[in-house]
Image (tube, rainbow, N blue to C red; front, side):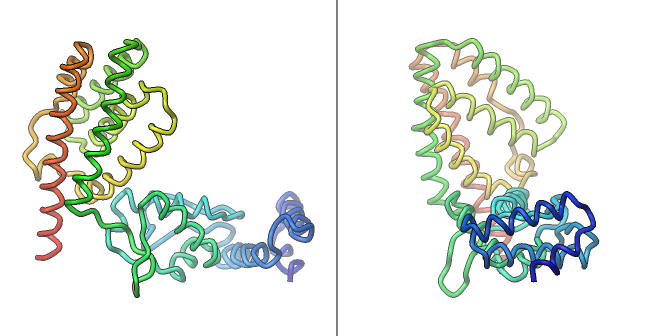
Length: 284
C-alpha cells in the first residue's frame, strides 16, 4: 500500500519525505494506521486535483490550500479562519465527512482539529448534532465583558505604575489605524484595530497567561461580530472613542480605570444589541 502511495509522487524530495514518515511509523514514532490514513487522503487529493486541494463549500473564499502533508493544526487553522470570517455561521454543524473531503484529510484529523477548536471555545459538541460552531448568547456577552474588564484593568494598573513609553506609542498608532478605518467605513479594520488596542493594553501587565486568556475572550466575542462587520451602520455608531481612552490612560490610574470601564460597558451594550439583531434576523 505504501509503495502505491509513493508512486503518485514524481518529485524525489517528496518521495524521500514520505519514506521518512514511513520509517518513523515503523519505529513507533507515529501510529502506522494514522500515517497510512493521512497518506491515502493526500494521494487521493493529488490524483483528483493535480497535487493540491483548494477548499470549497464551507471553506470557499478563505484562500487556504492544504499542502501535501496535512495536519490537524492546519485543518484547525483553515476551519478557524472560515468561522472567524463569518463563512461558517454560529450554530452550523461541522460534518466530519464533508470537511475531510474538502480538506483532503482523514476524518480522524478533522476530529483532532475539532478538539483544538473546542479548547478555543469556537466549536462545541451537541447531543444528536455532533460538532457545531459555538453560538454566542446575551449571557455569554455579559460574561465575556466581565472577564475582559478584569484582564484589562490589570493592564491599566500596570501601565499607570510603569508608564511604558513603548506601550503608549503602540496604542497611539492603533488609535490612528482605528480612526482611519472608521473614516473609510472599513468595519473589518476597525474591529482588528480594536482587538489589537485592547490586547496591547493587557500586554502592559507582562503576563503571558493573562494575554492568552484575554485573546481567547476576544476570539469568542469575534464569533458574534463575524456575522456583522457592517455593525457600525446597523447599530448607529458614528464616532470612535479610543482616542479619549488613550488620553485617560495617560492620566491618573483612577481616571483611566473609570474610562476603561465606561468604554467596555458601551462595547457590552453594543454587542448585546448586535446579538439581538442577529437573533431577529434568524427568526425572520
